[in-house]
View 1 (tube, one colour):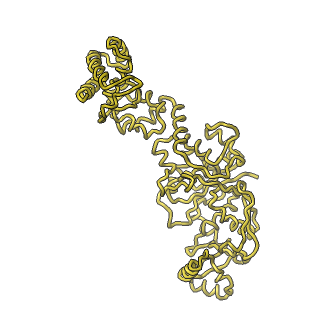
View 2 (spheres, helix red, strand yellow):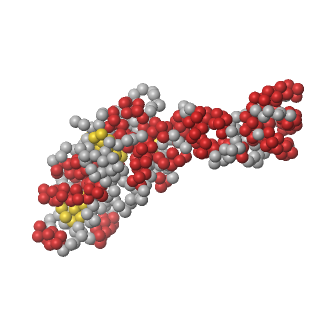
View 3 (cartoon, helix red, strand yellow):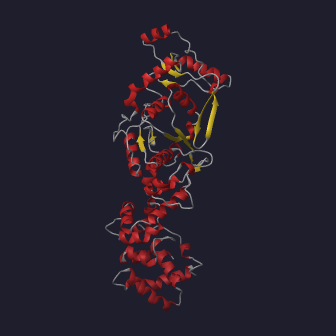
Amino acid sequence: MEVRTRFAPSPTGYMHLGNLRTALYTYLFARRNGGKFILRIEDTDQEREVEGAVDLIYKSLAVAGLSHDEGPDVGGPCGPYVQSERKDTYLPYARQLIESGHAYYCFCTKERLDEARAEAEKKGETFKYDKHCLNLSKEEIQARLNAGEPYVIRQNIPTTGKAGFDDVIYGHVEVDCDTLDDNILIKADGLPTYNFANVIDDHLMGITHVMRGNEYLSSAPKYNLLYEAFGWTPPTYVHLTPVMANAQRKLSKRKGDPSFEDLLNQGYLTEAIINYLVLLGWSPRGEREFYTLKELEEVFDLEGLSKSPSIFDTVKLNWFNAEYIRKLSPEKYLELATPWLSQALDPGKFDFKRLGELLQSRTEVFNQLPGMVDFLAKMPEFENDLYVNKKQKSTLESAKAALAFIRPVLESIGDWTEQELHDRVMEAIPATGMKNGQVLWPMRIAISGKMSTPGGAFEIAYLLGKEETLKRLDESMARL
């Protein structure tokens, strides 16, 4: 049997990280088993649809490297792959369930349902539809249909017995049927609900494994009742534990947590995001942490999936990203860093190549770069306390003396290169009777205004140029 998996997002906005992880696991399982990965757009809830969201889904999957074998944009034998384009598919199946007694027409008005819901709340009970329309005669139903009366089609859940299913992660899950509601299969607008459409589509598309969030655990018994009603074999269920922002709540865009696109826009590398994300809920065999997507296609398995929620840790993601950045070629790093450096610096005035060499090993996320180099464009204000450094044995008095000494040395340098700066200054320091750090520390503070810089005094002086270096030195000395 060919493995066929599907990723079925709703076009309601950005690709949040929980969705991307589901897509990743679904893709990897299909690839590992030589199967097909299918993209289906579930747009039955058209009130929540966001313009442009479908294109964003395509773009996000493409950027992540998760190529689908069938889908709206690539076609396939089971199309169309957009639920709203399959509208005429679902009603015949709902009517089939009506004929077999597993579903029924419901003509209840919103007012009646609101009253029943309010009554349940007053009693402290959970509202459950009371099967009010279940026993309408065929003649009354037909008369109401002929009159154009609005209706929905509801699933007829048994009032006794149990409904259950088997899940790869959670094992056998079973609930009492009398706790389940007669959920709507076909809405008043003629479109199917998510709960109904995904069962029909999964069957018609030959889906063998359904991987989705564990928020659907409570709905899965109803899905299996539908499979039983049709006489179909249900797929293998894999309900994934959530990705959490912390121990209390799941990741949420509304709470300010980043989407996949947000992370990309912040300067995270796709490879780092994917590598980190796959480990949020799945453990490879052994201690290895770094995998390319191709390598993951060869090792991913369901046995490594966790039964516990995973917490999204920005610190750990930053560490992954920094490791991937360090592995970039200098040329690739400079290509990716240049747009960020250009936010703070004029590329015509500064040596970006040299900056790249100094910054690559220090970069965790590319959006940090403007703040790391903006001092080169404009000298920041700083307190003279920065000159004091116990490790370098630098005091305000020694700093003042060091700057006064170094100023004429720097002014005398004609060939303003890092090597020449280094050689001339280091050659002059012994005459001062000071340690190297007592001269170089205040020099770097005086021309950068920062304790931490990409490079030391010579690199900063080179990047600033002679005129700017001397100007900053003079201004800093005047404040001491």
